[in-house]
Image (cartoon, rainbow over all chains, first blue to last red; front, side, top):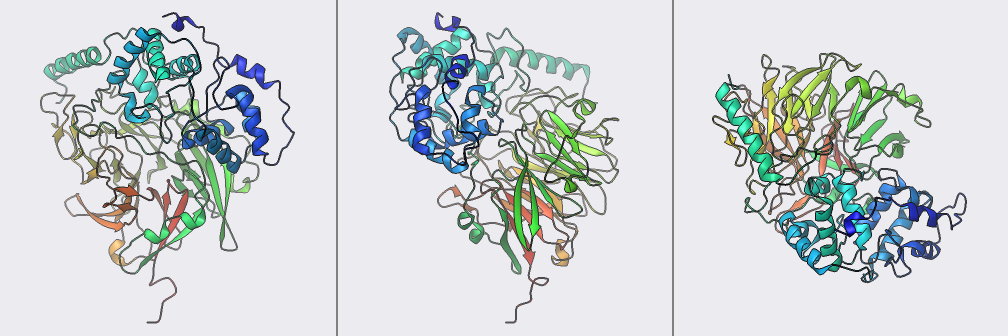
Length: 196
Length: 419
């Protein structure tokens, strides 16, 4: 419940962080190692984000990262804070970045989890059949992201965005699954998923 | 006849009942794009509940990985790669100057494929659109129908390097904004009207029959809307019979009602039955009542399909062949691209079939292009989605999984080989 009260602040922090970087103008392809370092500033050096509302990339399915970077680059899923970083990426850069982050081990973010809420979330997740797509250990596969050990605050925001049909570029299935759930239901789901 | 006061009562009761069953605590309006009444129940289906849609790669398949060598065709036909390097390849239309325009879904791109010295050049013409699957060519103009937009690019082939701003017809057509099953298929009919489908905004639910589950037609400027078919779950491919001028359309059956179906449909709108009802959500396939949404006499007044096209096979593109390259027995028969199943444990489809119209208005389905499904391994190598007949009579098949097109030709009109 407490978590559900977190105000909806889409990516303001991410945008602020973005201003710290200088993006080489008209870069033709990118140095992947340099780009990994850039990503790490917000998403965590080891791909595990310690920054509020910024998702972890470590251990995400490679396909998922590739797909999302394509959709962001081509503004099918516009994410303002990411735009400067993705706009000059070539396909092969995207694939290299995805391989890098997919291979890193996912670690807990250290956010405080409520076991009772997580338990309720587990029951709800069972009836919503999250594991059908996200796998029994919630590690994700193909276009379906890892949920286990993802940041709690990010997960709550993402679930709200799906439910409220504010996350373009996704297939409609997530909105269909979450339709009608309350903020506290979504918080419970997030506590459960993050705790896995 | 169907909407008697009794059945109306039942309908309302079942609407209320399903709302309660699905959304016990729902206190809000459904977001645009969804029916809050979806009745899908994977557990009750006794299918593997872990079935999930297959991912479509946004990345380029290397030319030597395009599985053209796996394709099997009847004797005398051959397949070759016509174009590649356009991920998410779906619908195709051809301009009068020979440019092939290609739509996609999730990737949001429209490609232009041109021919230079016998080699294909691929250019991403538009991007960032919401599932621009609906492409139509008319008098040199390209119509692009995304889920939330109807755009017209006049003289597009003269402006491939700088397409400029389109004429925005979105408000004129005023199509529903829903996302689910609302990626478009559209084409001009022999009557000069623009035909557009509006899918059901759910897997299985009570739809608003005034809005969803339809094929409509409009004047080219978006005026004069008429409903030409109702109770259509989701067609994303149709064509007119070259002789009878009747509209034939593929229709994808519901999911989570078992591995066996209900089977997908190939439908025909008989000449004197425009506006007829094709059964969704009460009656599927050749007269199978729905297991979740029940009403008395679910199939009364429903037009039965011309043919069943297989369980979960996902028949998309359909084209009646009018060329002279293929043997005479392919004249005026329909080719149907089946994208292949996801909601079925043993995969099915991933091929192109032929539908031969019969004198009684039905059609016979025969295999044509196979080889992309390995039944023993239960794996697929490609997903045929749409078809385009070329001026020389060859047939192009788009493969969404590999971002490629195959050119199917017949040897009698290719270079004859001396045996």
